[in-house]
Length: 446
Ligand SMILES: Cc1ncc(COP(=O)(O)O)c(C=O)c1O
Image (cartoon, rainbow, N blue to C red; front, side, top):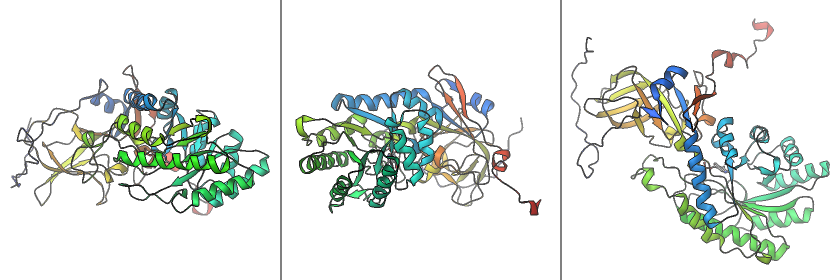
């Protein structure tokens, strides 16, 4: 076969960080996912392609549950729908015993198809009357975000003649985490306690829980110790002042996955705490609880990315390889930030889907969009790749398949590999008909 000719280029040698072997880390190909060949997956379902591993979803959910069960037996997981609301993914978590945590009416509708209302937590700053009505009728646990919502919830409950069980969402300042004060009632300035008094005085809603969500990708376990301690203190105060012992304390999500952030020195696999470390901190903070009769509330966790990131892979195909004027090799692949929103956050790990030979050289990986921001990885030491070669982007399970854009192209298919190694389609690739199906041409334009 005739070799492709490429004009020689002078490229500055960049050996990367020295490791103890004083060299470039070995580039290990990833030819299979849970035993299924990557090439077979793309041949069957096309490229680009999202691939989820049921095995990893289940093992992460069990790891989290067991880490908390050891220290806080009354812990209940509630799957954060916004992180990934593909039906198959939700179903795996629900089968593992998770409740649902939703932040919109659409998510509420999805969740109520899977679990009873009593196992749904409704968060978020925007809950129109219709959504509140649906939630109250189904016995969903509504977490109130602001005073206007409190008044709206009362009006809806009065109209329905119901006495719904609700929680208030609380925000607080914590060491080592950026302020996350946009949602809920503030603890330090007394707003949270005012909300409790206001809710009790209204006599329409029943205060049953407290909720807080302190941020996302929080690698600081001490922040959870403080959060738990503050919520325990608030629960004690409510019990002393109002004679109400809360039934649930919801600590929100935010545990870091094993991905690596841009600008992070150590890889996420080393820098992110384990579930056991988070559980230890939370249990320590909650030891401050002193409810009447030693009552122990249920502890809810809305962990998202730390459960699903690792289970998701994005398979992509090299469309072209070119040389940039600064000497770097550029790869153009068929998946970009349109389907990989998290590329703005994470330095995603990339592996070739086949054995590569050749000297690693500075490489940038661009997506297919005609936009400068479409960068999958801006700096990578990678052996040369040719059109048709494939890559696996790892750790893509969270947020991408909910925040993906349709910009200039259809969204790709999504597949799940079962624990028995069977690959099944869980979302069809969109087509131009998907797009046109939503559109109308007015008569005067036909
Ligand atoms: C209220 C709430 N709970 C849970 C989550 C899930 O967070 P994470 O994916 O960081 O665990 C989020 C995400 O921002 C959230 O807003």
